[in-house]
Image (cartoon, rainbow, N blue to C red; front, side, top):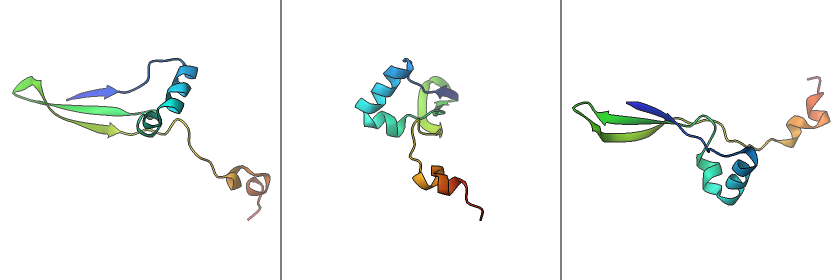
Length: 77
């Protein structure tokens, strides 16, 4: 088995542009993605399966306004 960490090898601005131009990247590529490659124990050159081993957080995520509004932050209940 081999673990492979996935990432975009670009600068921050280029990464942001890539996510904007290609929605599939934003949906599928997350910080913390790891692939698990499973090889045949009798033939290490023969890949049997590849699975997503760990799926990280989206780079950007929605936040509910009520969580960050002044009223929502300073409730006493």
